[in-house]
Each structure stands twice: as C-alpha cells, then as structure tokens.
Amino acid sequence: MPARPSPPRLVIGDLDIGPGQAADLVRQARRAHPGIAVLLLTAHHPELLRAEGDLGHAAGVLVKPLDPEALLDLVAHLTAPAWS
Image (cartoon, rainbow, N blue to C red):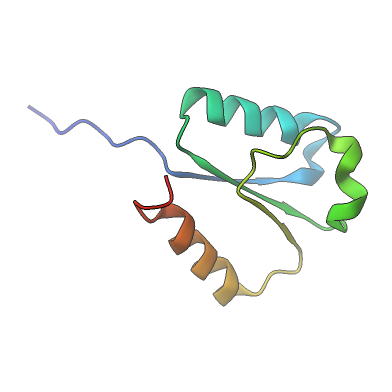
C-alpha cells in the first residue's frame, strides 16, 4: 500500500496578485490545512497593505527583493515540526 502523502506545511504567495486575493489565499489555505504556514511576498511596504484585508493569520510578510539566505532560513523555521 502506498504511503499517504503528508499535508503541505507551507504556502508562499505574492500579495500583489490582486485586491483581496492574498487575504483569500490565507483564509483558504488555513481552512484546508489548519496547521499550515502562509508566507506572503510583496514589492510594497507592509504598512501600505492594510487595505488588503485580514492578513493576521499569515506567518509573515516579506518585502522584495529578498535575501535568499534569510528566505531559506525562514522556510526552514516555518516548516519545522515544532512550528505547526
């Protein structure tokens, strides 16, 4: 019998996908997988994103351009078993 796939532990999305869509992404991901971490990326300053809606359930918002090492460290932290 094949092993059952494990649920995803991290979703990375872009806040600049359209008005309200990033907040929807966070809500839908958390509804489908309650322990999932949602990391959002943006080219805009996070203070300007309040109109996007409730992003409070996102694990974090990173401003582009990203430091690749910092991104890898954050991904490792958010996907560690202790985070969920």
